[in-house]
Amino acid sequence: MLNSKKIAVAALLGAASLASQAAVTLNGVLRDFCAPSIAGTCTQLNDFEGAIPGVVTGMVGSTLSGGLPTAGANIVAGNSTAANFAKWYTNSPGYNVSQATTLTLAENTPGVFTYSNTSFFPLDNLLYGNQGRSHNYHFTLQLAGQIAFSDPTAGVDRTFSFSGDDDLWVFVDGKLALDLGGVHGPTSGSFTEETLKGLGLVAGTAYNLDIFFAERHTTQSDFSITTTLDLIPSTRSVALPEPGSLLLTGGALMAAALVGRRRRA
Image 1 (cartoon, rainbow, N blue to C red):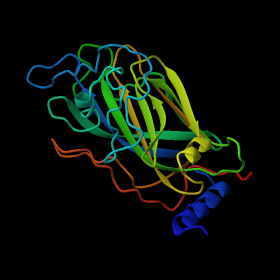
Image 2 (image 1 turned 180 degrees about the horizontal axis):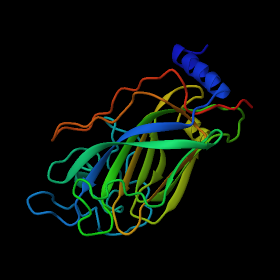
Image 3 (image 1 turned 45 degrees about the vertical axis):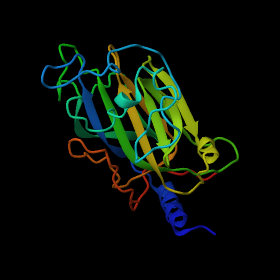
């Protein structure tokens, strides 16, 4: 028998099949890192504008801790250290500055939500600025939302795809679903509802969606998402902590309508 959470999500999925919305917005935080150092203001981490190792999997652990990724076995191969990586997605005075942001996926094709930007520089001329370059190339992005999936057949029916550079990790229910770490050129990866089932997740249930991105090197920045999984509007957000404190994620609350859609088999 379905529990109350699954019943509620199933109701939202059914409503969405009748009338889907045109877009879904994820809430997030951008953090700017300096390269080179700015005297008296910011110290450069070697992670940014350093080596270019290419795609490196295993830079992060397989689960979130306190809502954040932790350094994995291959963190050094990805041109970072555990101490440096701990600063990527927290407010770290003297190393980064932050501001809230949003990212909106549009439903340009029914049931397919996309965001695509081959010149993804959301911090141009902001925070530490471009530092004499044409763009601000050194930043991280954390996004928070909720996601669910339907499962019409035993095969693959729903997908989540990313293409871009540099590091990208996607966690669903705190479990790593997509691992594209490292400083690299535009690279593609994806997961499906079958991937999520393999992580122990079940259809018709709302799960936290956490996306962690880093742009660490000149001279390009690409960021593209395409998904047919069900995105659920919620008040979930990434909180901006006080200086020196850890990043806290906002509570995950289900809203009254689904921004994805579910097509019955």
